[in-house]
Image 1: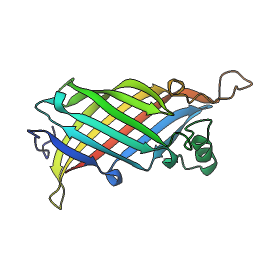
Image 2: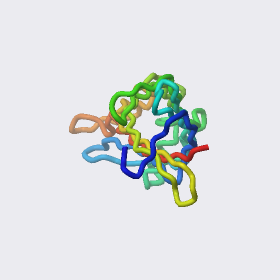
Image 3: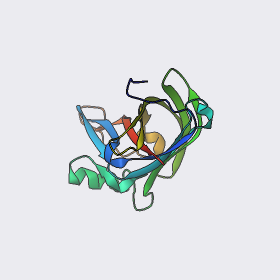
Image 4: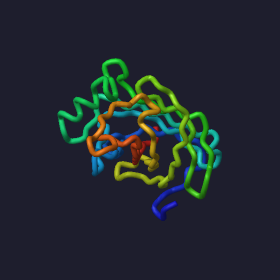
Length: 183
């Protein structure tokens, strides 16, 4: 825990503050990596540092808010080849258990649903501590990085290259940086 952080001694419910949080991803495209993010999301973290098994996380991401900085690519990502936002408007994660794995680290196990395909995943989450903001609100910080195979969630579109291989990589690196406000 950082020197400016205060310990959370009982279960505390937090709402994710999207203006101070980021839901980002990166995937290989031909030779380099393309980065993007989702700009619209909500979620709740119930965190009990003393009894992590009583903690939980729920997250909902608006799939149409995907933003890679290129409007044509974003339109393709919203289309049926990828997120199919007309029929699958949300990506969701709901935890089923939280297990302490280190001093300030936790394995958050739960169901991730993309394109209507639900899979159990384990996210290694780092608790960054809590602090009061200048307005007296208690805030908590969490981060996770995980790599997922996009094909496991129905994101299978690709095109073969004449030199061999494919245009888009299968592995997607997900980076979540969450700041949440006590409720």
